[in-house]
Image (cartoon, rainbow, N blue to C red):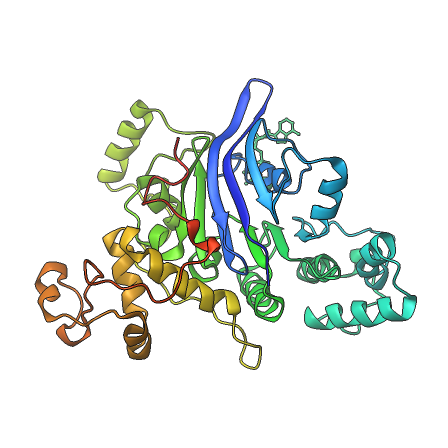
Length: 381
Ligand SMILES: Nc1ncnc2c1ncn2[C@@H]1O[C@H](COP(=O)(O)OP(=O)(O)OP(=O)(O)O)[C@@H](O)[C@H]1O
Ligand SMILES: [Mg+2]
């Protein structure tokens, strides 16, 4: 099973420039999380800080009891072996064929025989749909294939945590969806904890269990996908709809005068770009039929039901709506006919009572249940 990553009060600056401060979040083991944020908000810096390539000024990033911010080089070396990292361009060695690229970490970090290496490399290439392409050089294949080769290489050391930086860059929307499907299939097969950094709204809406967003040098929010997808926070809404209308500007945060001038322009009918206002919670993508069920998704359901009462009402509603009748019974969510008038959306038969005083714990809490403190304060200083 994947490993939990607990980040507390993490702060990073370069000289006088603070990139982000007091970032606090937990990546639950085996769940898929996505971090959004406008360009330059420090998403890549965040990933690099998690693997100890950059040193944060303060705060903790604890993995298996080891704080990567303060631990020794030796410990860091061990912790790094838990990670598989997929860099933006695949970061393949241009002069090596795909087979040797994927075999590289095994030859570098293990004492495995070439026979054993061959078995692993071919298995990972098959997992990512690259069987038969072993002899190709990175320069001879498409961007999508390079990403998949990068993913094969990230998988060879059996990572417990997989970090992915902008998997969609350079890919068309269809290929982006295929690689998203691959992430979910890999997650189902090896139960690794995923953190994907992206600008891609479709991916953010349909792939992860959890969503977070960095903006104004802070973690604006981090939590179950339903929370961001139903959020009224202007910056979150603007980003998820890809519009000009909102606090995010071309180069940096807009000042209030620019905001006001632009607002007048949009009110006068200028197209703010983006699609129509997309609201609500689209269905989450599932592993391909035949691939095992995602353990992370199952645990997430239990986890989210335990913290349900701490989430904003719209997110609670969305989560309850997504439960099957059996799950409602299992979690002790009672249908309640009096709620329709308050909420005004759900058909009477389908209305569930939000757990209040009558709420009972579905099972014993474990130590992974620490997250999060009551919404929406998590991550704010
Ligand atoms: N090694 C470094 N030294 C100094 N400044 C850096 C360094 N690495 C990143 N930065 C600065 O940190 C800020 C955040 O960079 P980062 O690459 O993390 O942004 P990002 O959110 O990943 O953006 P994008 O979405 O465009 O990839 C930028 O202002 C960048 O100039
Ligand atoms: Mg980046």
